Amino acid sequence: MGELTRAQVVVYGAIAVALLLVGARAIRSGGEDGYAVAGGGGGAAAEGFSVTGGGGTDVVVHVAGAVARPGVYRLPEGSRVDDAVRRAGGATGRALIDGINLAARLADGQQVVVPTRGAGGAAAAGAAGGGEGPISLGTATVEQLDTIEGIGPVTAQKIVEFRESRGGLASVEQLDEIPGIGPATMEALRERLQP
Image (cartoon, rainbow, N blue to C red; front, top):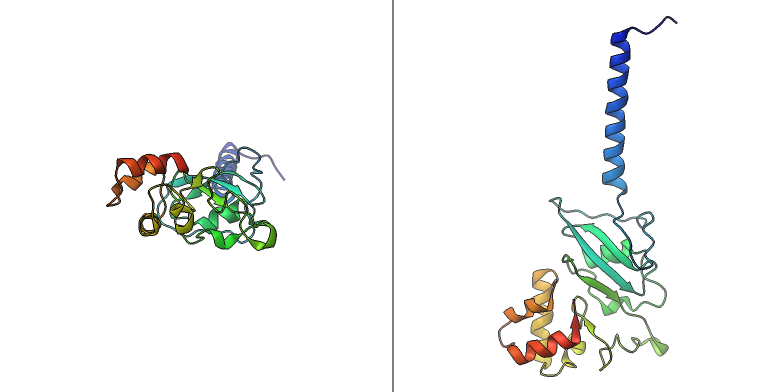
């Protein structure tokens, strides 16, 4: 074959640059796994992971507890708790997966805590919401909220319904919008709940 002309070199160069740009864009949009912190593994996305949603805004959530790769992950807006658990490698064998609402929408800055099954199949201490440690606002059950000073079963149910209607909550301060929760109750909630 003969030498390439200047025009052919320019055309081949343009084609190469276009292919590189298309490839980089495909890698960025198809393989982005967010980032992992505090022991999270980053790695490839869990098999079968998919999120459908319109928009292009992401949410950043902290997945902790009984998952394979706890850490901080970036997910598309509209993602559910189930998507976050999958992104973190899925629930472990000790997970009490029925202890969280997998269908709840994620909110930016939310922490998803997958509780651990204790002896006899019950939730481990702390996850049951006793007097120890803060309770996760994103996954708290009516029973756990009922253990907080000044919160009864009716108010606990209102909090859970409010959280689910909003698709999750990013801060404890949002609970101030629920009718019947006053300053004293908000103070108790701030002490016992974590975002």
